[in-house]
Image 1 (cartoon, rainbow, N blue to C red):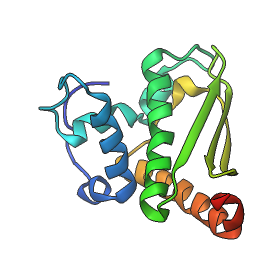
Image 2: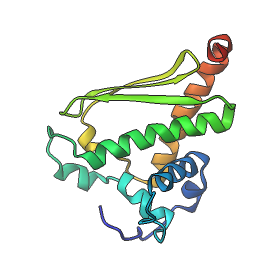
Image 3: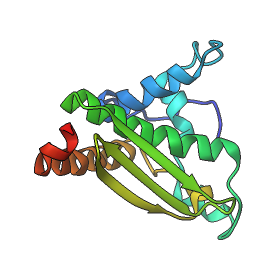
Length: 156
């Protein structure tokens, strides 16, 4: 992944509430200010993986620590977006083996609001910023709907 801004920046995707939550998480990780001068589009570039880039990756491989960090950051942003929408803290738990297979659960109160099997994590990414925003918004909406369905468990 390069530090160059994509030729066309999707302003609507950059303004999306989920993408804003992800950028907030990424900037919070930058405790020494190394990314301060980078634009939001450049920071999000690490989450973009085109079909051509995906084809160059092996089918089976061990994910590197930066990929694992991006996976965790993505689901932390889902939790942050849920908290902004509902006022209830949502916490992700990601458990992966060294080969990039595992599970992610997101809890709010005592309720598991989202559960996903993860595989081929070394290929984690989205084709465009719009698809990143769409996937994040879908996960947030699913989680908020689950919370609305079982409010007594969320508040417990």
